[in-house]
Structures are given as C-alpha cells and as structure tokens.
Image 1 (tube, rainbow, N blue to C red):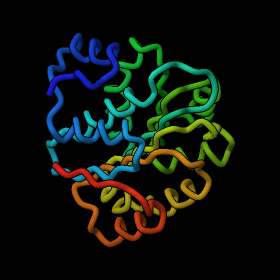
Image 2: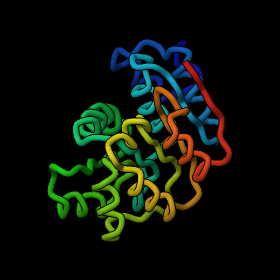
Image 3: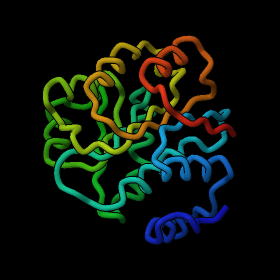
Length: 203
C-alpha cells in the first residue's frame, strides 16, 4: 500500500528514501496508532515490524518541541537499540526531530545530558532507560507513545522488573507492543496487569 494516509511531509520523505509502499500489516499498525488505541502487533520475523514501529513514531511525533520526549522505544539489546536509532536517524534529521540513544555501552552522563538538553524520541534498552529515569534524566510528562520492541525477547533477557518499575511511573499514553506471539505466559500476565484495554493486529 502507498502512503496516502500518512502526513504529506512524511510520505514525501519515505518516497525520497526509496521506500515505495507499506505492506498490509504495517498499514494496519499505523492506522491503529492513528486511532489512539493501545495496540498489540503480532507478526512473524520478516513481516516488517521494525518499519511499522519507525513509521508509527514519525506519524505520532509530527513536529519538533522543546522539553521532554514524546516517544520512547524500548529494545531488548544494545545492538537492536543501536540499529533502530541509526535507522530512525535517517528520517528524523529531515523532519527537524531529535532522537537520542541510551544503551549500556555508552557513557550514562553523556546520554543523560543529551536527553536533558531536549529530545523528541528516545531509543533505549530497559536497564539504561530505567537508570536514567531514576536519576531524573528525563521527564515523561509529555509522553505520547511507548513502544516495546519484541516483548518475548525483552522478558527472556530478564527485563521484566525494570519494565514494571517504569510502567508504575509513566503517565497515561498510547502503548504499542510488537512480538511474534503474545501467548507466552510472562508476556500475557504483563499485558493483563498493565494494559487492560487494547486492540490486536496480526500479520
């Protein structure tokens, strides 16, 4: 599917980057984000979950603004956070948006200062995100969108408690979770506890 439903400047940028169309799953996820509903996006590997996440952020965070972040994407590993940040940066620079990376291999003081200076989007692993949050490294008062990338992997790698502590402090915002399945016991229990109302989109 083409980009008729995206805001014009984002559609134009995607086309300039030789991204020709969204598949049915990606389009459904973005429509879900546009609806304002919490969304579980379930799809096998290779279905375009990463692209759906990136375009959803760029559709939701549609203009620059000083102060606290409007979107946070949480990744299970430093490498995945690094890769997503690199991909997202290809687009944010042309939309006058700032995206900051927070991961264990970086200097936490520098990351804190970068985020504190003002950013629209944070890409992070749970451990570093939680460390920055408890150090008052950023304010979540204007948060619009929280994305969990690969929930099964996040829980498999032992990040459940960090996520719970974060969730207990977050304001009301829209949630978008990606996974190959949401029936794994720990994942299902977490959703039941912290996301009672949602829609499910499957590839």
